[in-house]
Image (cartoon, rainbow, N blue to C red; front, side, top):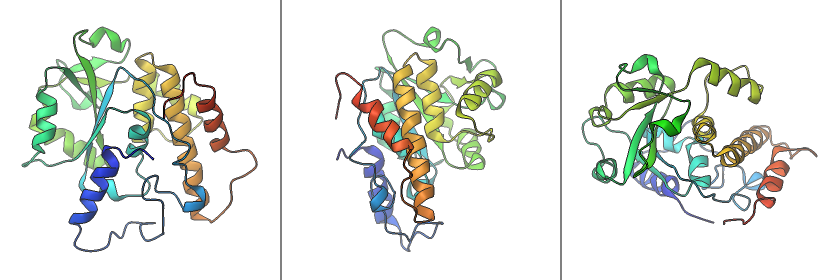
Length: 248
């Protein structure tokens, strides 16, 4: 079992809690790494991939403690994933050092309507916006939609970075491919869309499968049901098995 940045941040945030976390589903015994019920745990399945990109999850306080959070799925797949609790007035010094590191090209992922025109980058093609001498560091604001907007407005340390937005057409195509009626994507789905637009199609597919598996197992756990004969978990195992070479 690989311990990554989200696991470490979870333990740190939990140690700071002065009372039990009372979010829906928070009291149910779960695997502390995948947040699923033990009989639906997927930790032994997950594998990392090689990627030219990295992600920085800026998480709104208790978001890291929510069993339903999907940001951890990104860290399960992408080795270079960083995670920090958001603060308007006291941003994490390690995070600020990462953002200032010249080897990275930080890019905030957020809708264009909330950014100034000069900051906004369109999603196609992403490669045209990247500096060949730097690795892209995609910043995802992880929380409810209201919290994400607050983080975007009140994080002056992000103001100097470009904002990558996806066109309504691109989002619609992605949503149709997902066959969902919800027009707001989960954090892991946004990361999958970033990877797909970057040309890392297989990585995007694996992250999408991991998200689907997590969602299916999470819902099965709520009603204490067993895995059906045909399930997302089987497709995820098959997808990982077909990769050459596999990375654990």
